[in-house]
Amino acid sequence: MTAVKVSPRLTKSPAVVVTSAYGWSANMERIMRAQALGADDGKAAYMRGSKTLEVNPRHALVRELRERHGKAPEAKETKDLASAIFEVALLESGFPLDDAKAFAGRVHALLGAVHAPGADLAALADVELPPADEGDAAAATKGKKKKGGAAAADEDAAKDEL
Image (tube, rainbow, N blue to C red; front, top):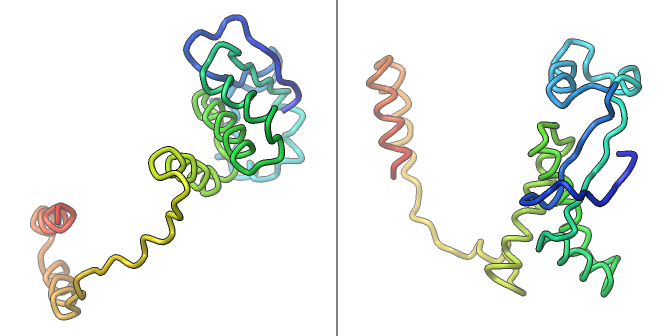
């Protein structure tokens, strides 16, 4: 990312990522990463061009981020909100995320803050689950090997519904 600027053209999205006129588009970057030598970021960095994050100052999320930054710029929630806005803009613009697991963690934390403020979401581990019957699981695995095609797929679908 080379620049962040206020965008007068955004109306509904909080942010969008755009590339320079002579760099790779999001689709071209995705295609090149999928190539055999696409993992070498150093060699292709010059071809990607510069990306610019354009933000919509009228959007409620950007306003909330600005307010949080004014109160506590180093707070984890402020950083998580900024990162989530940026990563959603990357996804919406067609760019891949470098760390999808970290993004999912931030989204879960933000959703938890909205739906269960102050609650520790990891504390839900005390919920009791029915014991797994190992005999049934072994029998299902054997039955799946004997059966093929649609019968095995129907069994999987029925298990997913439970």
